[in-house]
Image (cartoon, rainbow, N blue to C red):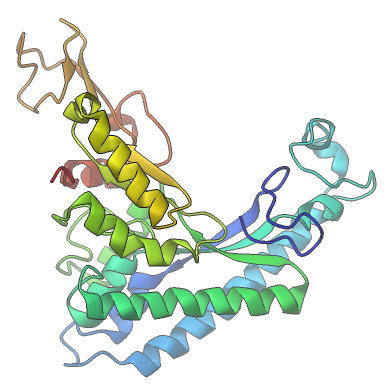
Length: 315
């Protein structure tokens, strides 16, 4: 949680993001990168210029949203104050509460942005260094916007439960199929390593850790295992400790829980069917975004495509 300049400091209690606006980084990358074959070298001056224009528009949108929210009648949601879900209410106006929250500058698709600009994602060190400059630039802008507006602006690594699909579809409609960018049904979540990259859990943490300290309005790093990991608790503890040693503020371990609805076998069940009774009546429980679902099929086709492509970081 970003620092509250109005008295609550770094405390998370009774605060939250007032509203996020997510920046489509891949689109800026496509417009100024090499992926369309219009140039041999990325136009980085054009990239930075357009990013600054988008940041100014994002600031304007967040300030206008904040003003609109604060104009509402406090009687609309009294339980928020009675139960101290939101702290600081002065019994007069909503701004007394909302000023403690964050104006979240969200972002999506750092991997696709790098791919569009340079033909490689940020698993590559040179692309990673540029990506880190981009996030640091957004972070600096957030600090300046906080001063300009006397509000708490922060950097938000958007979970993108829905817009991972909708933004990718719009890019596909506008630019066509571009390898490793729009040739799938989703954009990669925030600063994450693409799900198909065959890296170890430690390599994934090493790549994402320098970014995470900048995600002051929300971030997550996860590693993907198969269900057998529950029989190797020493390995789980080792990976968690490594994440903590690298100052990952929010860390998760994903593994599937597939259940045959006929014979009740549990484990990694292949698409062909249950290994015990051959049934195809399978419930597939997975941590698709920030939540556990009753079945992966309930999510949009972007998230379903992402789950299918996920590499298990088991080495």
